[in-house]
Length: 409
Image (cartoon, rainbow, N blue to C red; front, side):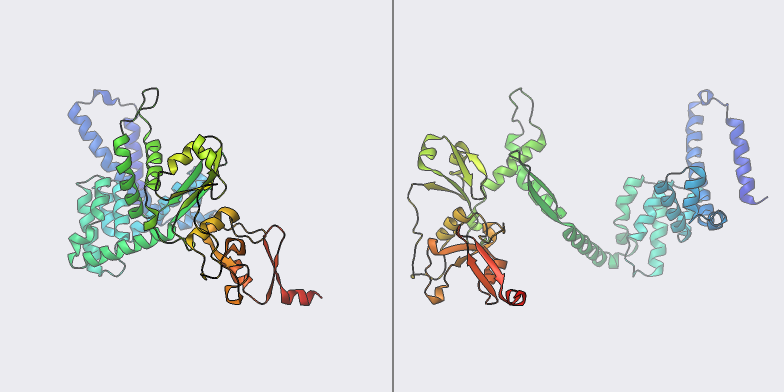
């Protein structure tokens, strides 16, 4: 009989003897001793299992299984993710003799072993072999004194102990990789829900999240004690949402980058009578309706421009006195056009260029009635001689490629 078979037979026989033993009759000190020894035995049996799994490819081939993990799933009803995680761990232990020996002695648990292996994998690839060996021994020694959670934290600073001469450069490189990964994963979506709300979902680098959280806390702190009408404290998520709105309303748009050729602003349109009476509906520059009460509140906020129909306005028609459209004219064009004026194009006005219907160089006027907003793509088409530009009765543009028209004929 192989030594492993003999050991398992002995373990099985011993467990048979203890099957009906009631631990309630153990003295307190004896229970503590038994629990400690069971922890050791559990780790030692786990190491033996992993050692056998690492060498059991022939068992899988015997029944034409892909590998021993697939064999465990089929023959012993093990969950597939757990089986493959165990197989990966078994293969990793083969290359870490110090970790395997510590687990075989019961010096630390299987979870400790996983933490040690992850910590070693996170080390730079170009470390000398003697440094890696020192790192493995160090983590195994620490595992006997710390919980897995604490060991994980210590492993993140392992280089400072085993190779302080390269720790700073390696840590800087690791942080750069982490930042590059975070920037590659960054995304943000802003989706109108159709019920008066907008869902904002995003993944941003940790530094950005920390900065936003810090800014929002400046607004939530005075509101922590704010109560609902029934006396309950508002949920923190709602406090953060209100704080986000306040942050936007208190942002000075003149300090933001120019957007679409103009300072970043939000324009609200309504009649003068509506503004005075507080009745009716106003509209944001993208067509979203809001109450006049909300409009009057926003009118006191930096960056909100009330475009009151019937009130005083800035000059919008400059004729030949200027070549480029002014910010005032762009605001008026945005109110009128809503988006790119090309047929079927919905690019927002903020991303559009102010286009002269007749080029200024050929006598065109820089007037509201002689200008339109076109996105960059269609603005280039408007000045491309290979395209024919047609102005539709409703003021929209339509483009046709001249060469393709000739080929069709």
